[in-house]
Length: 283
Image 1 (cartoon, rainbow, N blue to C red):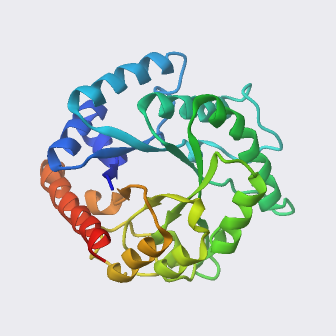
Image 2 (cartoon, rainbow, N blue to C red):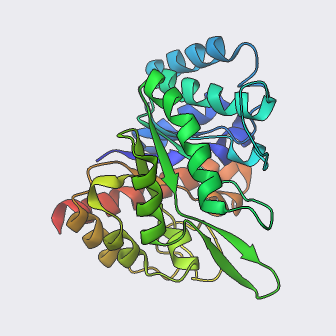
């Protein structure tokens, strides 16, 4: 099992090339490459950009194990095609992730206006991306999500139950469609993370977002900073026969440190990640 970490905060602080070096030096095997700020990287020269970045990964000796699509750039539209800039970025991110060596790319669902069927709309959205995933040889990972209900001060499910996640992947009906279980999102939508893992079909679970929280906010803490039972979570992954990577998505943890302490924060995060992997192998 490889240990990886999301690049978002580290790249913003140091630039992508230095971030990759720091992540490797801290003891990680791989990165979860983030496309959230996508305009420059996914424009006209995106293939050249991707190839140069892949060279750097290879030179440093670290892998890109998964990627995060530029989902926040996409807003609701009745239809999508590559004539739309935001959708073109999405397609370019699939190809770029494949060039970097990622096995899967996590694609968030899209919020829809009142009166539009959320599940049917996103089913069509995901199905439209599958041919690109097939072309470039990468898996589309559907993530369990939520949206904030400000009035009721709670989180509402957006494919946020095991049944909804299973159902979406079944309806996409492609071997290229898999699940990314975000255990923090599971907690804020009413589940113990271990119960959520148990509820998703084993064959769908191909990647993870690992972080901790207080069951109220999507905190993105380092494991053991929040309230999760990590022994039970690891046991659930073992029951599922999970054979993917341990990928940390701990943006808040990094944000709580000043830039000059980032390398030390990375080293602590890697130690915690290695501990979780050891629990998996020993349970």
